Amino acid sequence: MEPNQLQQQDRVQLVDVREPSEWYAGRIPGARWMLMGELSRRLDELERERPVVTVCRSGHRSSRMADYLTERGYRAENLDGGVTAWTEQGLPLRRPQDEKPGEVA
Image 1 (cartoon, rainbow, N blue to C red):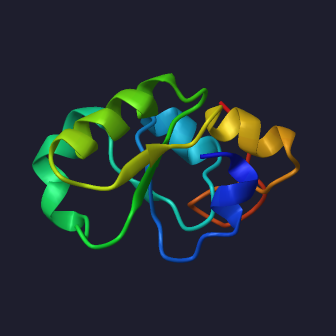
Image 2 (cartoon, one colour; image 1 turned 60 degrees about the horizontal axis):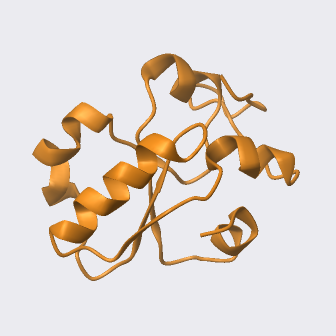
């Protein structure tokens, strides 16, 4: 899924699989943080009826997680280009601790 398409979605579950330093530097508003290594243990936190979009810095790690979710019956897609592509399109990142503008780490 392209960043501009994601911005127009309101029913999607956005799952950020990045590491702590990346997450705290800046996240896409509305994203839920689930480390890659924790995703399998936290599947019950996701609604099967709603589509899932996974995100990381470049889209590589999150692509694997989208495949993982799809194999388990979720309707999952990857955010093409990750938060890097998101910010390149002028879309906002926010620091989760204070909602101030964030950055790609």
